Length: 228
Image 1 (cartoon, rainbow, N blue to C red):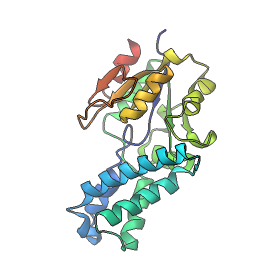
Image 2 (image 1 turned 45 degrees about the vertical axis):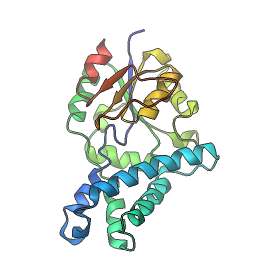
Image 3 (image 1 turned 30 degrees about the vertical axis):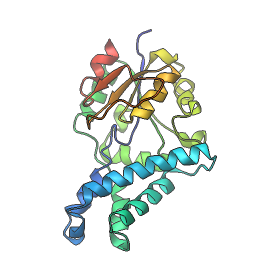
Image 4 (image 1 turned 135 degrees about the vertical axis):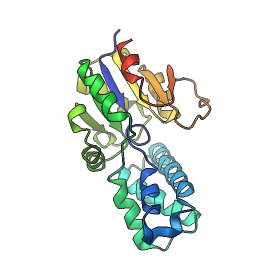
C-alpha cells in the first residue's frame, strides 16, 4: 500500500529536547550550568522516558508534564544542581518553547505539498504539545496533534498507535511512523506501521523483536521515503 499518512513522535524527533538546558546555560544568571548542561539534558531525558515506562507497566498513569518535572528533579540532584528554584523554573519554562530541528519546517511542508496527512503522536500532554507546536510555528503543516492522554497510557502500548487509524481511517501499512526513539520505532514496527528511526546520535539498534524499516541521521529524506 502507498503511504498516505506520516506520523511523528514529538520530543527528540521534531523538537530538540536538549534545547532547554542549552539555552539556560547560555544565560548569565545560570552560569553554573555551563559545564553541566549536556549531562543534565541527558539525565533529564532518560529519566523522563524511564518514568513513562514504569508508570505504564504499573498502571500508575499521570500526564507527561508531571513525568517531565520528576525527571528534571532527578537530573538536577544527580548533577549537583538541585536546590536552585530559579534554575528549575527556567528549565521548565523553556521546555514549553523547545526549538524544532532545522530541517523540520521544510520537511513537513514538502509532505503537505505532496498531499499526505501529517500529525504528531506523542506521550506529551495536549497543552505541552500545543505550546511546542505554536512556538516552532508548525501548526499550518500538521493536520493533528495526537496525545496519549486520550487513552491514558504511554507508548509503546498498542492503544496509542490505534489513535492514528481512528483519526485518519488509514490501514497500518499506509502509515510512515517516524521517531528518534529506537524503542518507539521498534514498537510501531511490531504494530504494523512502516517505520523510520531518526538516529541522530549514531546509537546501536535496540535489541527488540522488531526493527525499524529505515534508519536516518535526520529528517531531510522523509518526503522521499513517503513518496516511495
